Image 1 (tube, rainbow, N blue to C red):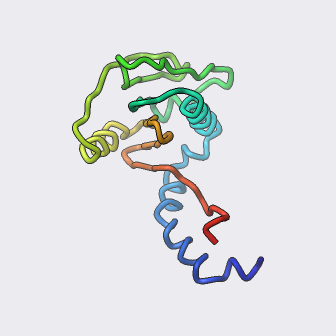
Image 2: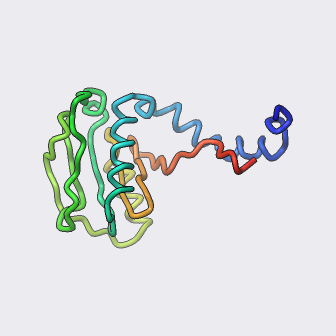
Length: 147
C-alpha cells in the first residue's frame, strides 16, 4: 500500500490535481460548514429531482458565512425561472429566466457574475460551483480506482 503512494502514476495524479488543490486553498469558503451544507443540500436536490435544464443558485459569500444552521434549503423547481438569488436566510430575493447561447458564453457569464458570490449551477449531470469568479467544477480528490 505504501508503494502505491510513491508510484509515478500517483505522482501524475497529484500534478493533475495541483490547480484544483490551489483553488481550494485560495478560496476558504469551501471549508466553511455552511458552504458544505448548502452544497450537499443542492446535490441532494439535484439527485432526487428530474432536472432537465440548468438552474443557477446565487448567494453572496458573506451570506453563506451567516447562514443559519436551521435554515431549510429548498429551491423551486419550475421551468419558468432558472436564475435564483438568495440571501442569508435562504429566502429567494430575485429570479428570472436566463438563456445563454453556448457553453463558452455561459462559463464566462458565470465566472463574471460569481465575483464576490457563490454560484451553484445545477444541471442534469450534477452541481458545479463557481466561487468568486472561478469555475471550481466537480472537485473529486483522489478516486481510489485511479491508482
